Length: 417
Image 1 (spheres, one colour):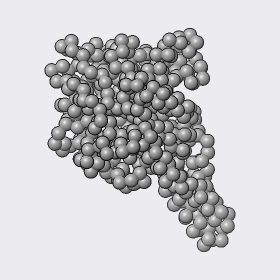
Image 2 (image 1 turned 60 degrees about the vertical axis):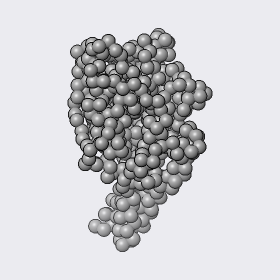
Image 3 (image 1 turned 30 degrees about the vertical axis):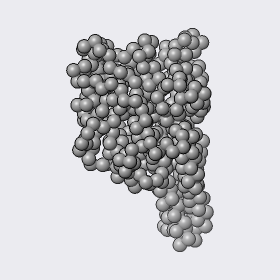
Image 4 (image 1 turned 90 degrees about the vertical axis):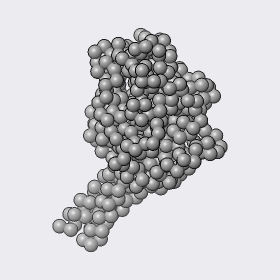
């Protein structure tokens, strides 16, 4: 019985270790396996525990096969831990390269004291702050009804804020056709940000088009926050946008094309005065920088979203590529990219970062060597604390250095078309 138990634990540890280093499994048709791969990569504790139990029971039962399998599992699960310190140094160098030497000195001391994490490897702080009880959540706030399609958002705000807090518009992923606001994992991240003194607006957008309807909805959400954010404790003059996957694509376009007549918002003001669409910072994870980098398949997500293949509608693809809207004056951009992401390969992030640097814009690219596509929304795990450490400080730096937009009063509240 003990030998069977030893082999079971050891095999579980070895399999989880192999899955964590295996090439990324595509979520198309293998959703559960891809999710399991992300979980074992981001959470090595179960694999380490299984390996230790396998070795322990293997020694007692003299099952050398279990001992070998358990040791193999332990070595494989310890591998990411060995990389964390080097990756943390690389991320610190990337922040310094993108924002300049002494960039943290521009963050006000009161914000420095508010940071919950003391270093990038803090695994307890993010977990506690993610379930912080002093966060008030308001669900299903209607912000627009474009073409009769109701759009809602959830608001995560500090429960006892003594003053208006910076605002963040959050956009979910899902390859433009799936996904929605809310969700347990994303909610943990937004609770974390609210515990750090931000008001997060987790908004819906029309999934699948017709293009550019999703982008118009995002711009409408930005204008709604400008007009109504103060009612939820948000300082509408300090606004950032955050997105993952498809949400990152929309976030970049919204941040880089304020006032662009090709992408009008899906809402109008009651008074005829149009609120400012500009944001002070944009944070994206796994950003699709140019939809032409995907294989030109008639049933592919880009073709279904934009209404055709690149050869048929080249001007649409040209306008829908964030890299084609890069200028020196675009908002400071933080890019997070898992190097083992197959859904949005690292080529997208590298292309975007290179274009921004060439244009003289402010950009930081954080690379996670073991990261896959789903690392963005996770506030805990192997990648979450590393990423959130710099996200917190990037936001504080951007709001400290940026120019405040003109506040919009509630009398200019928006209505849908």
